[in-house]
Length: 258
Image (cartoon, rainbow, N blue to C red; front, side, top):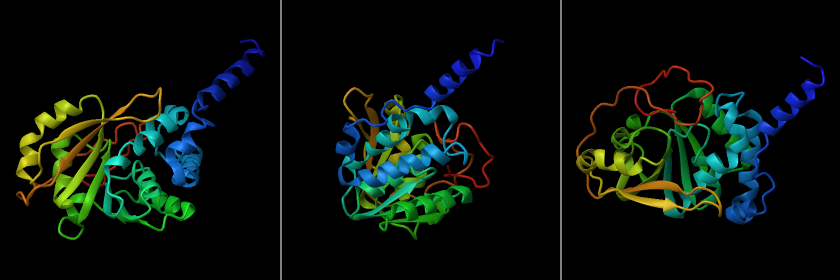
């Protein structure tokens, strides 16, 4: 191969790491007072996310649109105060973004994997998020000891499993706010009986806008309307969706995880 082809490859590699939303003036306006923390979080993910197995290499050039801005889509559906639990927090999506944008709420970043709780603790300290705390554990093990006004989840599991891990954590009147993809409606219909058994009301699917020109995202909303019955024992491994595609270690825990 000709030596002059090497710089072209280097240029292509650099281009693959460039996020088209870097420097976009709409971002500070979109995140408002949370912008300094969110910008720092993005920088930490960009610098360490692949190395620590939090995001795949191909995600670096689309961290803003597919991960950070996408995570912010849940915020309008969350209370400004009270306790918000981010189940399977993983890289902190959406939990870190939620904590930055809902400073009056107590945000619990619930995650069973130690290497990810280490990361979350570092981020919380670096960003000075005094309203956030990291809790290592599985959601099903927190039933009875952790009570939330809202629960968030992103790329954790299909709704039939997710209901079993999240609805029992909610106080009556509390709300599950789950980020989902294009099959949200199908998942909600398939999981309706499970949700009802666990005290959940009918699911509604909201199309949440992000930034002008970007794809909107689907948010599934379910309010806990009654006590329901105890969830069945959880089993199997869960998927984190686009997070951690470059590295999928075997889960050391069963049920909810990231």
